[in-house]
Length: 387
Ligand SMILES: NC(=O)c1ccc[n+]([C@@H]2O[C@H](COP(=O)([O-])OP(=O)(O)OC[C@H]3O[C@@H](n4cnc5c(N)ncnc54)[C@H](O)[C@@H]3O)[C@@H](O)[C@H]2O)c1
Image 1 (cartoon, rainbow, N blue to C red):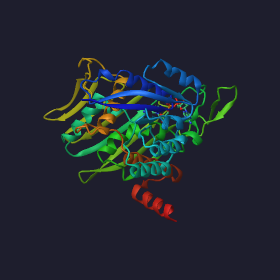
Image 2 (cartoon, protein in one colour; image 1 turned 90 degrees about the vertical axis):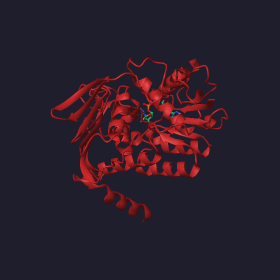
Image 3 (cartoon, rainbow, N blue to C red; image 1 turned 45 degrees about the vertical axis):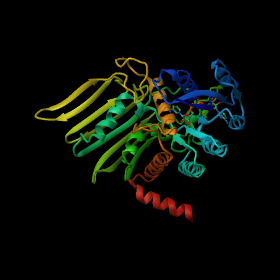
């Protein structure tokens, strides 16, 4: 028998609407143990709130998130607001006794992420952070390949996320372009979780990081006839090394808002001496696997619609963003109900804090133009916190 999960959304912008879309077609999941329903939405902008009037299950529309948190019709709160508001709202969700599905980057900086993770632990609520790309069939196959130990000795890992949406300098600035609202980590806060979720899940936290960060357009139109300062990092490439099976292997992590020709490209490539695997949303049906035999063979597999949670959609069809976003929500609610059954789960608070450690160390690397040891960074940080 399925249980019910009543969802409230705080922040009904780009991502809040994607959640309404995912929950609105929950019935496509076959025999799923949880019945999810969107019951309440909060946004300070009336225009954003009004959009949700067309969702028949929504009973509460409000501009005050505290009203949503007080509602007995809400079990789980999904929060998708600018980064400077994460800490305050996430903490209040937990204080209200609700479970939390938090948007990345889980706080504007490392300090905020730690405060939220500590509060999550103390509250005993179920808390996860959003990152949908691991739920793509190609990404799932990469995880399976790694678990089945098909790589031999590890050679290297390349992970990344590329956008070109900011290449046009006439695009008006928004909160994602400013340190005060997006965070000093800039593009790493915007795109970084997507690039590090799978590596962190396999324990591949870089031991050392050398960062190359770029700010390319220092100002943009403000959308009101003037100019707005854009002080966040636009592009970031991190180089580091991870330890796999006792041996060091290089990792590169790319996060770019200014990547010519790329609309929304997530990719991951892992190479070993016996096998390799490569997937990119650039060619969403195509999975490349490498096998070292008598000949060196890169094999191309046409993927179908195999998400971790079966749906009514035919196995030969192609998945898109709304499909793996729905699969991520299924993973969140399955894990919350104790029914994940070995499948890949959403980002944990501990992983979110790890990602912030990496990005904070990357800022130090950029400032000092040298590689930073994560151990040294963490001890210096702990000493600072206790002094
Ligand atoms: N998982 C993903 O793929 C993905 C993609 C984009 C953004 N995000 C993340 O989602 C979050 C939101 O990003 P977005 O692109 O949806 O932003 P957005 O600007 O489109 O939407 C944010 C919404 O929050 C509302 N808001 C602001 N202050 C509020 C408050 N105090 N109470 C209630 N509502 C408030 C705004 O009116 C706006 O509608 C960020 O953390 C971002 O990093 C995730």
